[in-house]
Picture 1 (cartoon, rainbow, N blue to C red):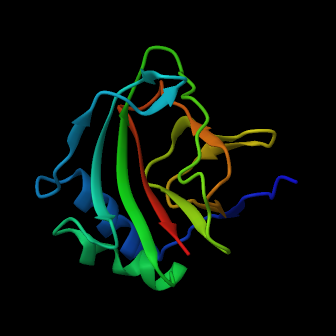
Picture 2 (picture 1 turned 120 degrees about the vertical axis):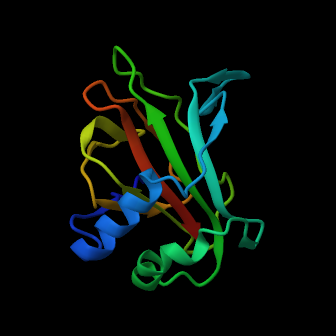
Picture 3 (picture 1 turned 180 degrees about the horizontal axis):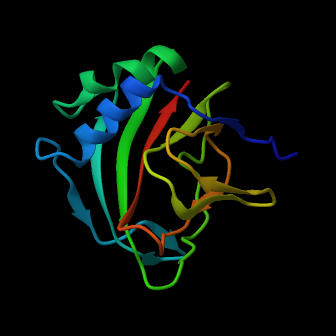
Length: 166
């Protein structure tokens, strides 16, 4: 049975959200080119810029402390990964392949997507609904849920932060 994702609009206090968003688009935050977003079979699909902030049970970026307002709200027991994604605009909206953030989930493991800008991009749940990309919107769902995203056509990029924890 598909569990409905939980949607929280205006997730962060406005001051914390603006500070976080401006930091990620500012000159101190590094974005790294990745020549794929997800796999479709064995084929890599799409391109994006990413920044792994937390991986392999430890912070992997000097920017980790900047996420304290989000972490204080979600209160993870044990973090698995935090990754910022910046997906450039495309001439037509492209849906990326469905994927699971982890194909094995510990009891109670969660994924959250914090949208950092408003655009026509979407988060899509397999067998479920499409959720619009609205800035400061947080979507929380079980980590092994099949989902995908799309590119945007009406802004320069779609930017979000993905959190996985249990």
